Amino acid sequence: MSRLAKESALPQLASALLLKAIRLASLLAALSIVSFILVSHSPVDPVQAYIGADLLVVSHEQREQIAEYWGLNDPPLQQFLRWGSALLHGDMGVSMIYRQPVLDVIGDRFMSSLALMAASWLLSGVIGFAAGSLAGMNQGRWPDKIIKWYCYTLSSTPAFWMGLLLLIVFAVWLGWFPVGMGVPAGVLAEEVSWLDRLRHMALPALTLSIVGISNIALHTRQKLIDVLESDYVWFARARGEKGTKLFLRHGLRNIALPALTLQFTSFGELFGGAVLAEQVFSYPGLGQATVEAGLRGDVPLLLGIVLITAVFVFAGNAAADLLYRLIDPRMKERGQWR
Image 1 (tube, one colour):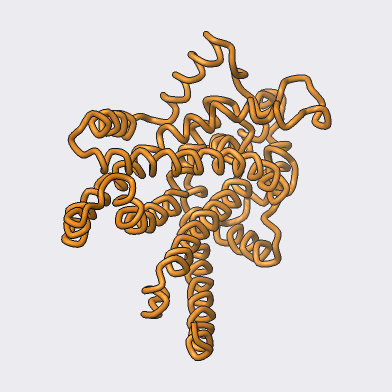
Image 2: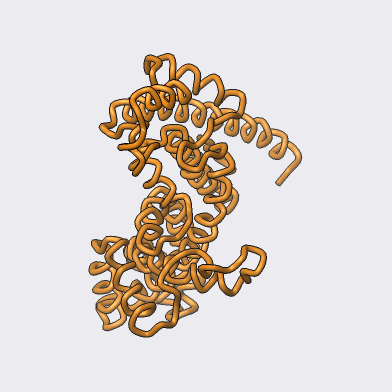
């Protein structure tokens, strides 16, 4: 790239990053308002959920003191403004369930979920791309039929059902993996090895990856079939190119970018599947914390998770957009930054 091209690319990059920052801020603001309105109209009583089993031994005066302590007696608009003001200063509040700052709870749970989602994301992406490529190169033959049957069957399979099936087979019947939890029960944190964590993470990650393979495989297969039916590929076939050489020279680079974009934009579906998988395996991640916060009316924790999840999904889409332009030189030349 010439010096002039580099100088012109830098302002485009800066403006693109600024535009994405504005979009993210607008998204978080709108999401905060909508989420707070929905949570404020929830039928779950936060005080009752906070008290739990001690509801019968707690007097009316004590209930009022609890509501006053958490600011639940204030008008919804005042609650939102107080929470929003604290959020602008980096304070998401205190979780009513865990009695800890929301950022600390999310930080601990997010690392567990991140390891789970990263493993399943990589597995589903690599296996799905390989399976779709194999099916596309063998259109109408038995590999294509088997892969299509697998994808069509699992594309409509709920993650929790697949998790229960794997749990029954590999944990209960065969005993190869633990039944649940993130670490062995009754073991101190400093005594838990990486091997123990991997064994507990194996089944949840396998659940998410098996279900997530179908989308990338079917998309890659159809894209490769379209490429193989193009004029320049027919010309390459006429010159004697076929098989692996044809795929590497003409098919791979044309299907890699769409597959990469689809994989990065699947962050939202990945988190949704992680919520169900973590519930099935009692995995202590962000998904399980989301369900607990919703059922027990933990408004600060629930809103914090919503915002963190939005940033996570937005980062995935932004990374896909950036990688698309780094890999495809045509996007740089046109300056198509969004």
